[in-house]
Amino acid sequence: MVRILKIGGSILTDKSRPQSPRQEEIDRIAGEIASASADLVLVHGAGSYGHMPARKFGLPQNFDREGLLQTHQSVKLLNDLVVQALVRQGLFPLPVHPLSSALLRDGRIERMDVTIIKEMVTRGIIPVLHGDVAIDSSKGAGIVSGDQLVSYLARVLKADNVSLGTDVDGVLCGQVCLKTIDRGDLPRMEEFIGGSNGVDVTGGMRGKLMELMDLADQGTPSQIFNASREGLVKRALAGEQVGTLVRRRA
Ligand SMILES: Nc1ncnc2c1ncn2[C@@H]1O[C@H](COP(=O)(O)OP(=O)(O)O)[C@@H](O)[C@H]1O
Ligand SMILES: [Mg+2]
Image (cartoon, rainbow, N blue to C red; front, side, top):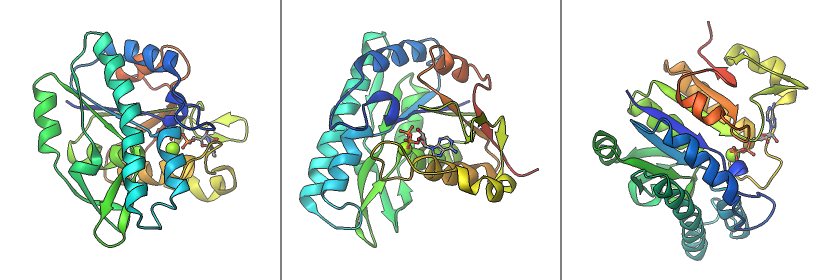
């Protein structure tokens, strides 16, 4: 059994200001993770640590070596804050940087060494991955979002609990939060699904849903829930549905 939890950069950082962590949220979420930390792979978004430098250097459209360096160094700072918060809970996390373990082609993960991640989980370690810059064999520079990592890892690791915490209750259709969504709902939802409120170069809710629909098509459902609501990370990890379930078309 493997669980994959993603916490969005919208929760961990103030997406409107560069390199601004929400330390209280990071600590609270680390505490909730401590309640169910076995067999867990944690992915976090890059928030303002990633999207802002990436945009400044025109990544990923521009191959910019300085931009790759600065963006990676920046997201590593947030990764370290998350790792340290887990350590304070008595857990054993280890950072796994996608830049050093994944190769993209046309913006999609072409290959990634997940054996390391599997071995860590077997040994009681929580691998902590994050949205990152990456090398793209066709374009030079790429960005791998936390959402793409979740979809890739959930498929390869055959995860049986996939939860994505963000700053809204789930997939909203106007004021209503959907219980479930599948590909068949997309046409009528089209006008409601947009990008991000903050600076987000990986597509906000639209990007997230594209990743999760692909995953659902391959047989793995997932849920999008509000990680800013206290207790929901813990309940999601326990297998409860606390947001919108993204599932395969019936
Ligand atoms: N239909 C929708 N339902 C929910 N959120 C939406 C929708 N359309 C656009 N969004 C935006 O997507 C955001 C979540 O995506 P994002 O900012 O990328 O979060 P994260 O940092 O968790 O990846 C929400 O805060 C909201 O502003
Ligand atoms: Mg996002």
